[in-house]
Length: 434
Image 1 (tube, rainbow, N blue to C red):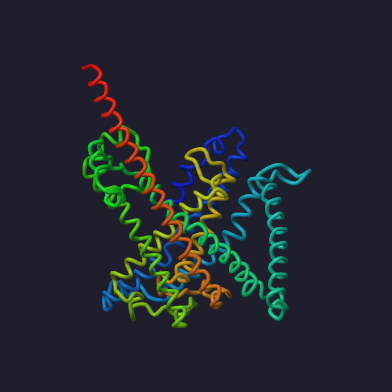
Image 2: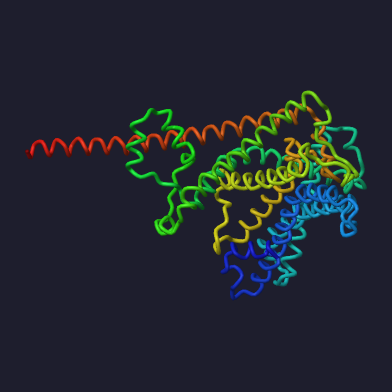
């Protein structure tokens, strides 16, 4: 229901309220398929948080009668369902929705919704054969002995192999978008808040002291220069103005630094302990031990960091110059863009569990087919991935803070210089008048 409300908020109303009943029906069916795909993406995001919190609940209430329904088989089944529906949405539903909206029926056939269905199904089968051939060739190049499997192993081998490649693409996309998104989170969050404003006499006093103290004074307010509406700034209370913005910025900074530190710690563990490698497991053994060395508090921090990384990756994805055109607009997003957005969000969200486990954000091992990816057992890929994430995130954070501090210092010193020039001109004017 929430996914449907989100999509209806962004969809272009003119595409669904038309005189052509056939086009309106086709668009509604495609929108329902997009709603299902977006729901699966949300479930994929919540996989790790639900699993971690379920383990902590069972640790807190081990003998509770009301918690007997919560067990490892339930969580394992949830992971399998999300994996199945992710495959179904990426390989079948979303391509069908696109072909369905673009089709007009075969030449000479009777026009109608079913004619479009037939054409979309034929195009989908051709696309499936093409993709299957590409997967078979890729598996033959990488694993010649495994590629000799028959078509009876399509479901057991080729589809998971295809999804492994899609997941690898999603993890690489997260590697590029998340560090950029972490730096952009300051500006996005700050645009929703009212920035503290120092009066001119404060700048005079700041100019009178040395530059080191100035840098410390403006550091908290130096992440970005915001354009807040005057009405919003006027209505903002002193608490919102002077406390809300600095606390929000410091919280984002703390979460980002915590992510980098956890990744650096995971790099050291990869060098010293082979159990730090991401792997799959069949039975999660919930309620046996906490997945964090700090207990329930550490598990709660893991959940917050996982959700924070997902939000940052989405912000970085839509802030990237390559994907800016996909950014949805309220009541002005056509159906093709909605399909592209749902596919992109599903790729990012379905790679989030692998992404979080690879970086060592959590110790909860991957369940079901999520742990069957071939590249997860490669030490060099995992190690290089951690190093790249730590390096890119640190560089983005340092660049953001450095440029913001420099901008605030220039603005502060510039205003102070103008004040002193005005005072000097005023004194000269008084002297000449005398």
